[in-house]
Length: 157
Length: 157
Length: 86
Length: 86
Image 1 (cartoon, each protein chain N blue to C red):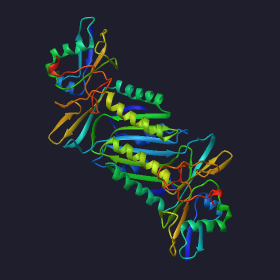
Image 2 (image 1 turned 180 degrees about the vertical axis):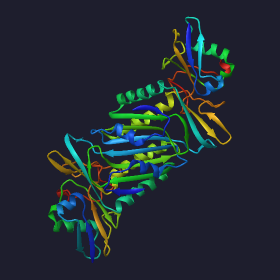
Image 3 (image 1 turned 60 degrees about the vertical axis):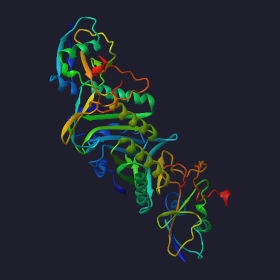
Image 4 (image 1 turned 180 degrees about the horizontal axis):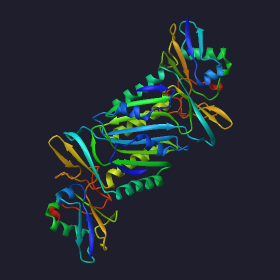
């Protein structure tokens, strides 16, 4: 199950979709809207996705995880639209025979989602709104070996 | 929430009990009965607990985790009695502002449960049954600094 | 030769549109298309933001040469709020 | 002086009882109680299993000196199936 949804995410369904007789462990990661961020009072988050590619990239993360760890199944659901405080924006479930693999693959999945799945987060805070990752003046850190595919800083033209 | 239960564990309740406005992440670990173990075909597991002390030790793990990581809340529920294949034997949920803390504390909790909470697991497999951890001839590894409080190997008397 | 451009999130808001069909010369790369688009929509010149390029729902490098009716998406930093690197 | 012993899991099955009240001399340690108990119940002499001691629902060392009406539990390896060490 690799899906986008505008409706509240049902964790039970996600768990059912990865439950396997050969699995002794299921690790889940659930992202929720936090009421504060970098000193701002957050009211809600709003997610926008590139449909089609987003689901495909989610599934690609599972394929990659299965190459790296002995996991049984992975499922990921991501919300789009407005997500209020305490509500779930993303849920990942990973089943495996052994817990070490489930933990590692789940951690990998959330890092990969936040790195390369085309889903964008707008923070609605007291006094304004902000697309996360695109604040003017934000400093980006280049990872070793990572390729910067484009930029639009005015001085780079 | 630190509880033993004879009934199926409800993950939704566990999640609700750790959901906090200040949390951006919830990590859960769910242990399920696996259909195989060390070459044996497993039919079910059966858990027996020392009531009172077991819950107290679960809560102690949460207290310890809160000292080590910036987590908001932890909840742990453990089944007693027979748990069939694919059913949940233990569930841990940890909420935190940031995912790193939630992952670390959740991992810590399951390792600690399996190390020192007085809950015992009997494996019912095709051809017999076995209290896990007490197989004759099992070799125990001593961790550095760990204190062996007692033993009853016949040669040690 | 025509390509279809889709804009999301901050780019969609800046350009005030989510979809643009643009006529380009054969041989144009996706990085060149971005610079052409910024000429059409100066509001897209958002400082300090790095982009990825996606064509037909897969990430590509800036040197990718556009084909007739390609669907092009310029991907601003995704939800992590961390560096937007492939 | 009386103490209450509770047995669980493999120990309960081996001894065929879950609860034993035992008369001990003042000054008896919990480790000594275990050896006395093994004399009463030779079936408890399970090879290759390490025990922890708990008194009144907390782990204690083997040198703990028993008090009147203490609840003593000998804790065989717990569910992890890994080394049973405090």
